[in-house]
Length: 341
Image 1 (tube, one colour):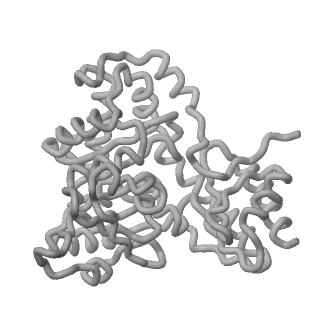
Image 2: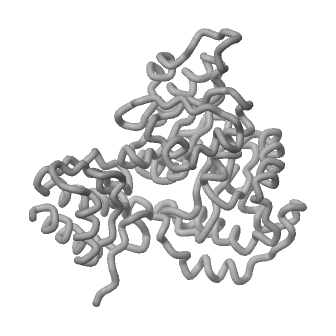
């Protein structure tokens, strides 16, 4: 039997041979003491690419978001975010449990907070109301189907938050995909934000790790929070080495994933009762009418394609380095056949 085509997520990617060699040869030290030279090189490289003064290597994107919100907000304050954003849907209420922050979910439809949405969520200050502190912008947006804020949209949203006296955290787990889709540098999408979290372990293929970017002062505070949350690592250069290879070699090829995603979206759109969200990057989200997404996922698995049911009627497939163009052509045929049944 042939190997299944795994389209569940770009998190299933495996480190490249170059990453494995870099990991084996990595120079290491104790990162809790700030003495791992490979971690330090990764952090400096990321800060330059993202346009921030400093960056901090963390084990996961969820921890990076949690730390970012902690350093920007205080217990009892509100965090404004799209109602389908990762910080609300997939982080186990971490902002509330770990930092005492209150999520304020805003319905946007396409995952992008406009200046009007931010302005419409503002409340007059009063001693009996919680203060509003932070706006979260997710670019690309996972549940909305990999939607992308343009440079102009990011700048407008950040300016609206600034005008309201709010700080801005960018959940940029897939900011690399957004930048490639738009043909811009990542720093152009982040100008004016206070903090950003970016992932290395999705489309960039590193085995583990994310980075938090911000000012030197905030990153020093973030280092303390990382330790408090149990994220202080010792000879972390072994995994940071793969992150350096990811940032230096893997970003341009994301365009291939975007092309493959469009191929899958076209096949899904031909299915009966299927509505596909516009595809900009490597995520394809399809709403199924009259059928169960978990049942469709099971049927696909029997035919050698692994997909994800996001809820009872929503199917998601994600392209990545470890599925080729030929894999996606075969998967497209299976998707079309399954949804035509």
